[in-house]
Length: 356
Image (cartoon, rainbow, N blue to C red; front, side):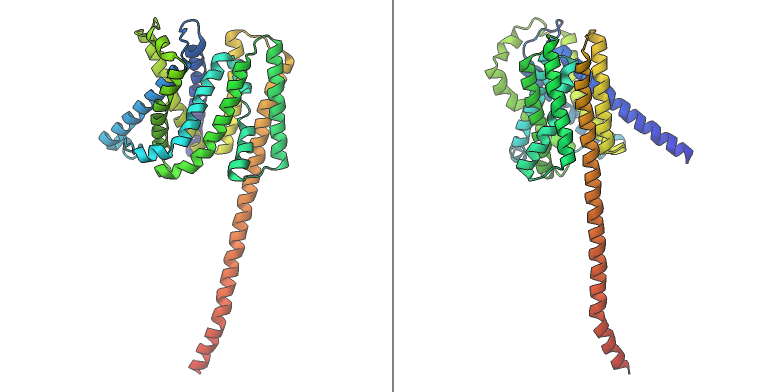
């Protein structure tokens, strides 16, 4: 019993650690690719497009392993199949997906890693708003109060970042846009998952396949093709290694997120994500040796605390709703049994009379 508990605890610890490692590493790596003095490639859409190409290649590799090494990987990953009709149906989600990853990277390009979490902290707020308009889902007063705390923390953080002289309004705009797209993405995922047999890996394949096509007109409009062709490090092995690593981290974050939810719970995943954001902020300030005002720290606390409060409130509400449904189902079952017994009573009486 003790050994099972120890092994389970070790598994959970390793999964959560992997999530933290991949998530934090991905943010710092993308920051390096997007705005470091070492790279100096002013083509953020090209960098994001290449990460989607890597994701499609990874899906192919996983499918190949699942097919050719069935004892080790059999059944873990679906076949590498693309149906253009399904790809077309998933297109609205892919548009939100493209906006999500593009605006995320653009936000990270123009703001520091320390401010990144605050800059795109309105995802929860937009999720509430869009869920009401798209799905008709109402939100409780407590959850709305938690959203209010997040909004207050966001504006206080913007004010303090401006006071320190490090604010990029363009970065803030991209952060808000990313928050909208993340909320839209979560809503559309629920709608299109049945199209891919509720398989998240197939959805990843279709999303990234569509994204590789959708980014072409974006790169054309942004004028990135001449910039990429004239890039001095276009044949540099280290540059392409870092670019490929960024794409691999993009796929890995989806995998470790799924594993963390599977081996813990959605609530624990959200708590872990909030704690990770706090650690990431402190790490960024330490690495880049930045000074932040006390009110700046208060803004981060409000954003993280509001997000945590919202998660706890929604978890409690979902549990209460689930308990109510179970109780109602129990009552309906008992009522059905009583109705059947009442209907059987005349039949029993008739059978008794026949026997007499």
